[in-house]
Image (cartoon, rainbow, N blue to C red; front, top):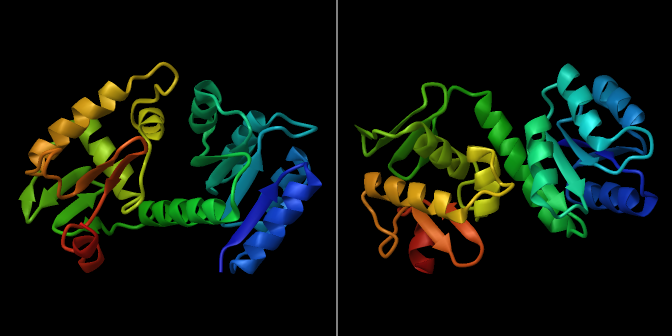
Length: 234
């Protein structure tokens, strides 16, 4: 059971998150201000923080920095600001992910599970396995069916970003922010070019994908081509 700290000044949103997370098996507790939230991070040591950027006492970006100075706890930003500069600033400040308002509880809990999986893997020496593909974070190497892949830095970063969310569709906007730190003014073409290079090294093409699936108008996901449920859906 994960413990989630919700830092949110809107009582309706705060109560809905607390109630909804508890119904989904999490231990949820809340703070209405940035300072109270920071104190809760230090005192309660939650597994993850949901942080609203529009707080009454301290700017949410500043709160991210304050938390990061004291803790490595994962942070998911909750914001109504649907613009690239805000997203990039939050990720650069130390946030692990973001959710746009209005949101669905199932969307939030899915993001929580994904971020917790990634952070727990990061603290492990075990590689990420997807079918015959092995990604070693510590050594920044990858092998396919036992053969080492020769990957450029951005290619490895792109593969890792997708492997950390295996099975989930990741938008090109998110990949631009996390891998290239250039969602503000970045081009989808940058992702497309690196995907084509990565596909070539994985022995596949966009027309005949195995590991890298494009979902038109949504993004890309890394899948296990040997998984039974994936074979049935293909």
